[in-house]
Length: 150
View (tube, rainbow, N blue to C red):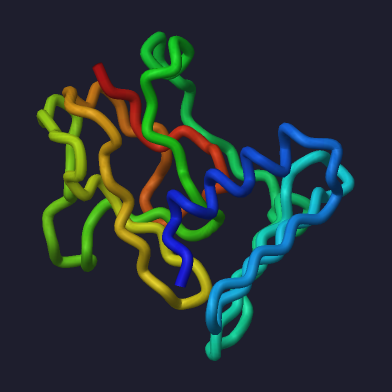
């Protein structure tokens, strides 16, 4: 199966090109990207399991808390996929991170549930969480800021 980093690179490649469709196959895996009418890509990943599809056009708008100055300067952890945002592994558990917690690259900061799959989202750099920019159990969109980090 393609990992999230490979899919992100393919999305960037499609967005930066004049192509409207990009399809990549490897063994039993297949990724098909299509530019949606609003300019955001549609992602389909298939192996011998059901197809996963994400499209900004199919997602209702979600109110997000105000982003801090860190978020505006680009030091944020963004949602790599569309899904439901969770701050903890279960309702009884403590959150992965809270404001003021120091994280290292690779630390799990939250979970996004997509198509009944729980995807652990990791910090891409070392730093300190300065704000949580999404609410627990909210639907988040691809690229939506989740945390600001300094």
